[in-house]
Length: 350
Image (cartoon, rainbow, N blue to C red; front, side, top):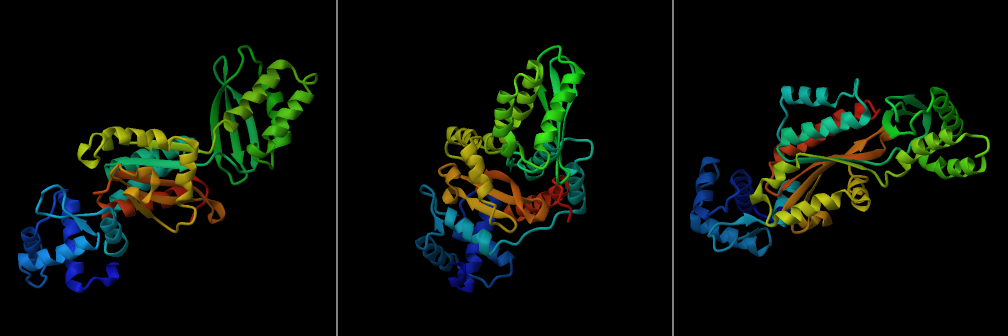
């Protein structure tokens, strides 16, 4: 539809949307006339601008909120602006350095590194940021139980592509180190070269069949080590900066709907839906309002990029949720650069 607008209508539409994104207020014809004049566009009278705005409204790209004389873009208008007119900004060298440093995984678990990257993106974008990753589903190279304090142990997993993930589990009090070694050896002999999901049922069946060969403590340690991943459902969702969106009451019509959105995002089905939005994507995608079923009636937009692992496979998604009146020109490159920086964390150096 953008390509069907003549030069005058396109210029009026683009300037109106830019003013709306900057101020959040309906834009009137006189304000637009001044803006176009400052932009060096051929002088247009407010009356001429009103005629073009009426035509854009009839096309479904603008609407008049309440009794205001000004106009604001519809969700369709915003989407067409983002897809067809938006000019992306450049990140500063300082911002690129900060993103790269905060995304480094040195000395941190994968979960901690991803959580810190999500917090960083929330801070830089001044919105809520989220990151979705599926459960660990890669063949394993190594698994080991490491004793911690009484009643707790660390399970160390190393996948065949070199990713390391640590989980703390509860174990029975008084478990000796030899039991942890036995549990490690039992799982290593059955898991190396396979995923936990593939081997889970087989290991449970073998535990039941070999109860006479393994003492009770060893069986409990093995079950705890496997169960901590098998119960993870369809994936993991990390959300940071919810308060920035919840406190922005002008961004949504119903605060309770927004709270419900965050609750809905944490379900297995919706994590899968979020991951599915990027599986066929090349780069950043922008979903505005009802375009994504999760955001219907919330007045929110989602800017999301795939997380690409080894062999260019999409293994997750990172993005931001904010009001539809986002600074897309800044946030799109922020999300894109963060996703690229995380390639190193997930073992897919460019």
